[in-house]
Image 1 (cartoon, rainbow, N blue to C red):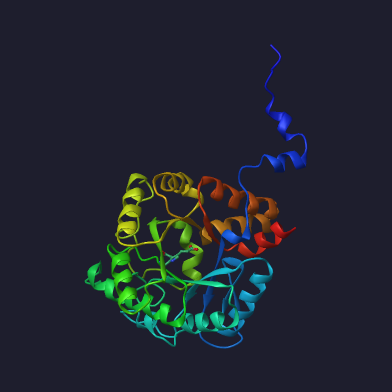
Image 2 (tube, protein in one colour; image 1 turned 60 degrees about the horizontal axis):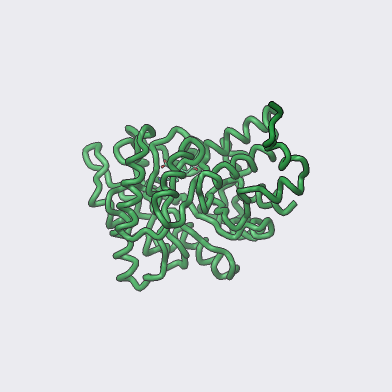
Length: 323
Ligand code: PBG
């Protein structure tokens, strides 16, 4: 029998393909991660992430302006401290690099949204995301430090705070601290389903945040678990998260879809450093077509259900989409 139904009929012509396309990428859904440290005129490329830099607040402002030209108007900031200590005290210092950069970006651009990553691992000398005692990462004593960090970011002018530490109860602690400091309208994007992933490797070079002993598997999730992600998301929403994130993105597209299907909140996905570096390395070797790979990657994350994509490809994808 000759087929009556021919799916190829709708693929004959580029305009027709565009007409029936289900998933459309837009730079409106991108968040561009940026690393900021103290100083002036800093623009140091991160070895394992070609094209991604450490900035000082002044050069960071230029990068935000350039991203804006590419259509990208949301950024998430990660800070490197001048000095690390056991508590990570520079995380909540009002004159630290992140807080300084937030103030400068908000003063320069009305239409740019600034998110801040709330965590301690970049700031602690042991490289863990919470308070350490006798080789253990303690949950409850970490909450106060994380909440203080979030309030300090809000005071600097952050629009959203994004806790990435994976301590239990941190969303509630941060919500309460923000509310009592008068920041009731600052939203929380919770890294709700964050896995203990090998794909953070290049980030740990970028943020100088590799744990000095052990790993993060006592607080970040086991890559084998999917149901548990739904439970983590439900808990964070109960505690007051406004948006939730799944991280990494590509190895967890199934998790993104499940979260999207189960909850009526905006879902973000973090296309992490290792995902970026794989594409960059393969493209540099001529093994992959960079532009097509980037757009296919981001499309797949969106198709899986992500409303928001945090990605180091934000600027290049913004340019590609602008044609
Ligand atoms: C901090 C944090 C990490 C990332 C975002 N926030 C690293 C980690 O948990 O080790 C990873 C981002 C990336 O790989 O791009 N806790």
